[in-house]
Image (cartoon, rainbow, N blue to C red; front, side, top):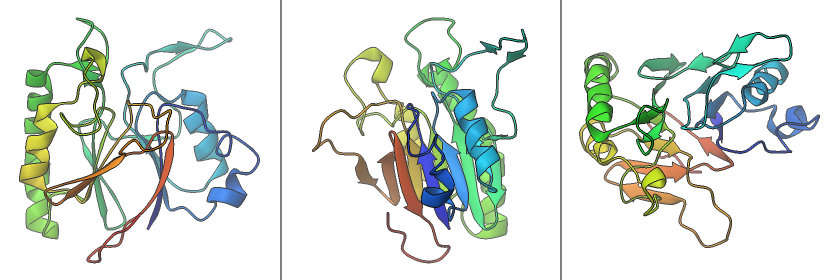
Length: 215
């Protein structure tokens, strides 16, 4: 399965007439947050594959010129706090960032993120019984604590995501949130049995059930 993961920035090669030529062979699109709704709607319109997403800390309601209020990209699949199966692929989503503005939407304390993970746990355990594994891909906006995150409060990662990987062992954790502006910055890290990837602003990932996966 070929997956195109996106985050945080509108990419010209994706939001263009070239999208079918460049990405027409992908099987799944994953948005890791802070992406304009029109961008994801364009992708789902142009490519005949599922587009799934989580929210970023900057995602909010948008008011169109017609006055209509939207709070999600039309035609796309929310992964927030749930597990979705695409063929044999098991994907779950935990969007948002660490809380740095009290009361802000899509920002969470460590305790709140822990509770979100606990709510996912029954479905992950069911996956283990039915499929022999808990999860293949965890989609987040924020990185885990100490992996690809930064020292400022807004870009600090979640410690609870480290625990998630230790227990549920997804093949990948895909995230955005941390923008990369220079070469040489580490964007892929192995943690236990999970490969953590900062997909900003786009990344193609290959997944094959029962085989070693390479980017």
